[in-house]
Image 1 (tube, one colour):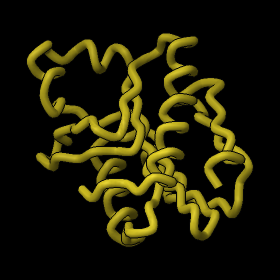
Image 2 (cartoon, one colour):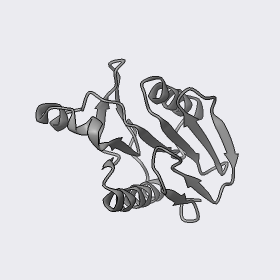
Image 3 (cartoon, one colour):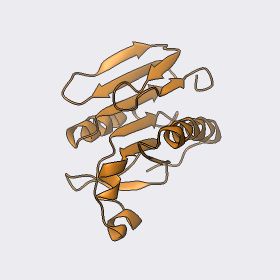
Image 4 (cartoon, one colour):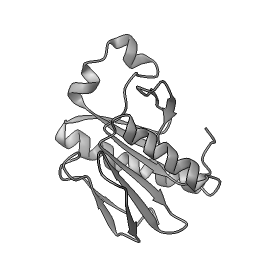
Length: 150
């Protein structure tokens, strides 16, 4: 996994902060930053830029499982494209999350001002220059403003 540059890292942190503030208010689950690794059900080790797991799913893991690359796919994942990222590789990663149980995923492409929305059991949706994103039924009442991300 390549490291982020300063601009991407700053924006990634902002996304994680917004997700974390929402989660502290709702107490529905747990928020994870870009240095958290997960072992997906297919055996792949993956890191996301930001992710979230429903409280009941996280608490079903043992303390030992929680302390390592947890054997779980996040319910929600965000990938923020860095200038050095390859779009096709990142799209494949998003599809892998979806195939492994992620209920909602956002691939944010700053360069093209596009967001690809991945929903379990549905084809991806491409949004052109959205001002915000809704957490839908996965993250009730969570809205991410993209003003600072673009």
